[in-house]
Structure formats: structure tokens, C-alpha cells
Image (cartoon, rainbow, N blue to C red; front, side, top):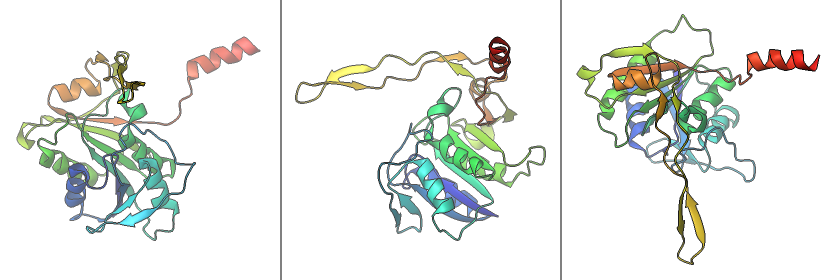
Length: 245
């Protein structure tokens, strides 16, 4: 198996290093990741400037761009490496519910999916890298699974509780939950007295009932959510068609 690994925390983040170390024994890997933290970059491509690819001392490649840039360049930029699977992460902090729309971790996997390659995004629920060994071990176990029940390519979003391995209760297939609206921006001033704004914290869980990703991880389970890219609101499409006829 050949695996392309990327992330949004940057090529030096503990999560991507642990992920690469966990997958090296079972696959031929290549790491192509951002040069710095690009959290919240979603599926953005850098179209206003050229990109550069550098080789790190540890053999990884890093790009002065977004997670999507990294996967795009890796797949179209002349690398002879043709992956069978794309794995993104391990992210520092959860990507559940509405987070997936903003997540650079999920975006890197989505780019692979758009190229017709099975792709998986891994995140830890809480920041700080506590029990990262658990997340890395689970990532390897999931990569080793044969998802014959899924049509390829598939796009999976996986969140792992920050728990010791023996305290993980299992794995659950989940749907995305929902959050309340984000909290207000934080308004302050720069050293020159000019008004500036920081994006506020994400909203609290609104739909976190049984069957959601929020509910699974809160109860000690790994959450796996299959994602799709088609944003068409089918019900409204039918209503719109009838209203326009």
C-alpha cells in the first residue's frame, strides 16, 4: 500500500509525526504538509501566488500553502508516488459537526477524495496531544481495515477521544452533529490604536444526541463519519423546480 499523508498543523506537528511513524510499518508513505499551521483554511487553494516545495531533514516535504495545496501538488506536481490512500492528521483538536466545513484536516482528505482516492481524516478530540499514542494506534488499525462495505472512493472523518488505549470503548459509525452559532468576535486594538478583530470560539453543541459524532466521543468511542461533497439540497431542488414550472 502507498499512502500520502498531510495535515493542517504543519509538517513538524507531533500529530503528523506520530501518524507517519504508525503507518511506516504497514505501507510506503510520503508526507507532504504545510510549512506552518494552517488550521481553519478549509478547502482553499492558493491562486494568487506560486507555491514552493521543500524537503525536510526527516524526509518529509513541506509546502508554503494550504492543506489542499499540499495534496493537490503531491498528486499533480510531478511526484512519481501514486497513493492508494490519503490520510490527513492527526489533528490537534476535534473536527466534528460544523467544524468539518472549516477544517484544513478534512480539506486535505477531501482533495484526495475529489481525485478519486479513498481518504481519511484523523483528529483528537481535545488539544494538547494527550494520549497521542492511542490516536496513532487507532489510525493504523483503521487504515488496516478493509472497508468492503463502502463504495470507493470514500471520505471518512474520524475523531478519537484523548484516552488511554484500554479505555477506548470501541468504534461507532456516526452522523455529524450541529453546533450553536459561533461566539462573537473579540474586538481589541493593535499597538497603533487601530481596531482589530479576533474570530471568537466555536459555538457549543446544539445537536449532540445519540448517533452523532459528539455523542460517540463523549462516551468514550471513536467516531467515524462518512462524508460527501455534493451540497445539493435535494428537497429544495424539487420544490424549486415545481415553483419554476
